[in-house]
Image (cartoon, rainbow, N blue to C red; front, side, top):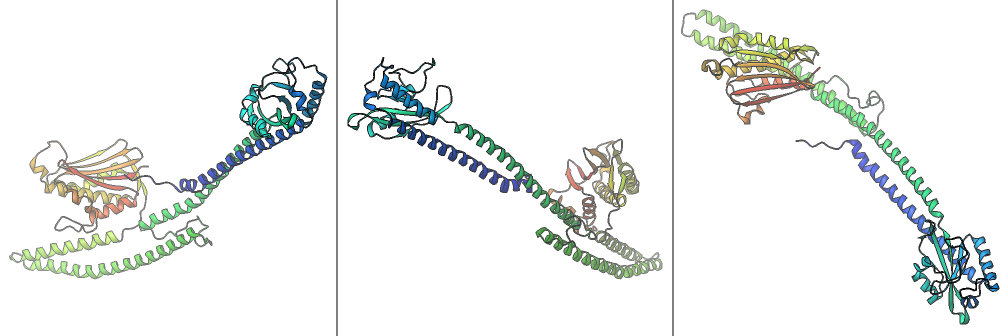
Amino acid sequence: MVRPRPTILVKLLVAFAAPTLALFGLFAYVAYQVTRDDLDAELGHRMQAVAAAAATQLNGKYLAKLEAGNEDDTRRQQAQAKLAEIAAATGARLYVFDAGFGSRLDTGTGPDGEAIPIGWHYYTAELDRHEVHRVFAEGATVASVTFEGADGGLVKAGYAPLRGEDEQVVLVVGAEAPAAYFARLDDLRTSLLWWGAGLAAVVLGASVAVAFLITRPVRRLAAAAERIGRGELDTPVDAEGGRGVGRGSRDELGVLAATMDRMRGQLRERDARMQQMLAGIAHEVRNPLAGMTLFASILQDELAGDERAAHAAKIAREVGYLERVVGEFLDYARRPPLQRGDVDLGGLLAEVRDLIAADAERAGLRIAVEVADPAPRVDADATQLRRAVLNLAQNAVQAAARGEAAARGDGAGAADVRLAAVRRDDVVEIEVDNRGPEIPPDQRERIFEPFFTTREKGTGLGLAFVREIVHDHAGRVEVTSGGGRTCFRVTLPGR
């Protein structure tokens, strides 16, 4: 079984479109991640700066001593006001807490909308205990990871130290703001998706267009090669439908088309020389054969009643065989172009039956013709197709006669030679089968080769002629042999 091969379009998509889209996808992913990381880092640095700036405006020594109930203390309210000014200027929420994550100051409000009192526990900040520990231990300014705030939005926080006596870190100032850049990242992602879809459409369209531009002349070249293979050497090879050979096409396909056209011309010239040579051979051979036939006939008349007349008759038969060989050889080598038309296979098989009826009757063989109703029709050269089927039918009669099917009397009522035509889907099958000696498996492929024959007086051109005619009609011929019957099946495109 022949596996289907990838088309040029599929190859272009694999070699061009797929890598392009993959690279764009990788670029989009990297661009998105780099942008996200840069924006995240930028917001973290900003929150660290805001927290550090706020720490310079606060008295850590005083705030560290505040306890629950001191919310109305004048100095605390002053510190709260400074923090609120910074928060308003930067758009960040600011808060101050101790090592136990208890609040001292906060510009925000609690879940109930009230101001956050002293001692309020910051559970969110506690999630950043590692960063907060660095602030207390090292006096460093750090940023948190991006986290989900109480309102469900993403938030980024920065922490800075607030020092008391002896420059010891006693509190931490926190500054947090919503990560609004994620909305811009969503816009970027949407834009990348749209650009990716547009790029995919452009790449796919370009691949299809290039594949079409490549495959159209390739298909034309393939059709031209098939015509040349069938012996149709008069039609010029044109890869571009009028824009290729002779019109200045200089690409590789144009060069290939020009080369094929030169090859076609050379084959036509060689074929013409061969035809001329064959005609000369036929003339030179047939003339002496005609003379030999004439003199053999005269010799038979002169030797009438003499025992030597049998020798003259044998000479006449051999000369007749030579004439037949010359005729078949010329027919095979000089087969004319197809003259297609609408052919009724029912009528064609009836004509073949009439042509072989006399030989079948002499051999005592029964012939059957089976044609579907309505009779299948094909677009074919009626003369050449009839000749191919007639050749198969004559071989069937000879094979059945050699097998003495009628003399055996087996299969009463069954035909010794059967001609049939039937339509199957979009094809038409012509079958010629017979009862007789089976064809050995090792000969079933070779019987269609020119000059291969198993008969003493055969030329080996009959079945080769049949195959050439069927192939010219874009069909195929097959043979099956077994169970005492041999069947030749010709498959042709239906009308």
